[in-house]
Image (cartoon, rainbow, N blue to C red; front, side, top):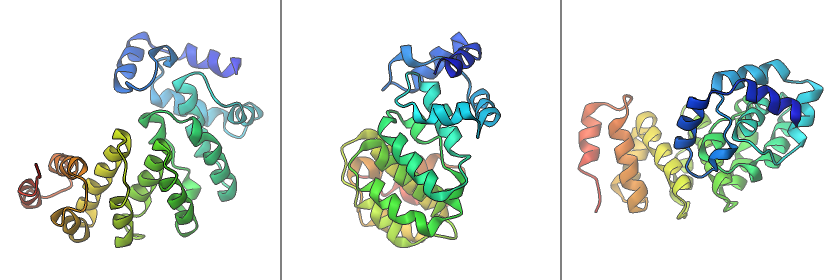
Length: 226
């Protein structure tokens, strides 16, 4: 959509474009405009609910990375649960990088955690890299505190993937679980329930975390595998 693109290009910064492109090696640098996230969020807030936004959300796939970010931010404003799920399902097939995938968590999802679970399992079982990553990300964001169930850890354990961006999210999930649900998570680490790469990456992330006490970190270091 020309109007959206024109606005994004007005917000672009050439130096930031180079920096942003370096963080997302899976996308073509020519599709990065170079707009900072706070500026895109403000833009989303300015046009949310407008006819312009509604048309933009239907016109996928987008050409530019920042258009996909804007799309994700606009999804966060949807207040109807069913509409939010439908809109996310329409968008996810076009998500092709970790940065966009991890960007959007519609607030209505947090208010419907029980209802959301079957949909999360659909994403996790889809076999599609960024749908799987998205589902695990939601389990990490919404289900490691008051809505926690040990079965969720088992679900993430059971994912069998060779995809780097899926296993990075699995490691991130378990490092966060070690900070929030130590007894459950560390038992799975002790029992070597994860593949070696994800196991060791989990420990690395946990050791780097400020939320995990030193005695736990020292113990985890002893659990590294070859």
